[in-house]
Length: 284
Image (tube, rainbow, N blue to C red):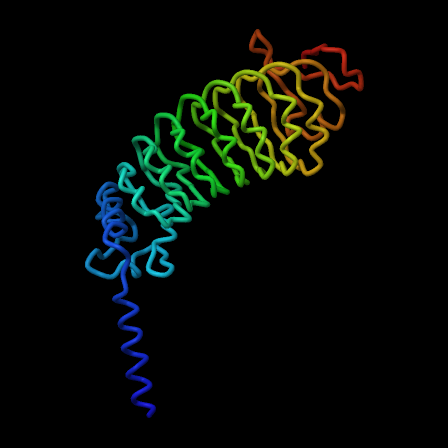
């Protein structure tokens, strides 16, 4: 009886190893492998082995739910066929050498919760199709050379908790829809080329814990509504062109104590006061 049980378990294990994903999902993975010079990856895939054995690929019920190839020397571009991984919940390609653009087809990954393409060499704009990822909680595209404006529909990401886009070349104003994301905890837009004002609607972002707009070209009055964000623990909005007076609480909360750049390119400190109607800037 013991031998029969052992044989059964062995056969069951063998069948589970042979269990595979759909052909379209496997083809999409192979395309990713080929498009990013898989033969030179640090940890390579054996394409003749079951997908379940491939490094960084996680299956659930014979469906690909996660691809995590962070820091694995991927060189090349993200293929449009990535959209065929329709059950994907996580795509993490952080810290590689991926170039080209973010394919608009990525908007087909409706189950995606985590999209991390940070620390690569991506260029072009953030495709508006990203705003169709209604389950997305974590969007990290920092340390690339992305340009253009933020998608106007970004506020459609109603479950977003982390938006990290720092160290790119993003221009234009912060879309008003972004302020409607009540779930967002971390908003890192520093070291871009953003312009315009920080809207008083920021008060709607009630879950916000970390806000960084450091090193942009934003202007206008620093909204006192920031003080109403009770969960805000870290903030750096310095090295913009904000003006006016700020409270002691806001100045203390900012990492660089509200150091701004005036129209002459000189670093200045905003005056700290309780008078909300004044708008004096003093040079440091």
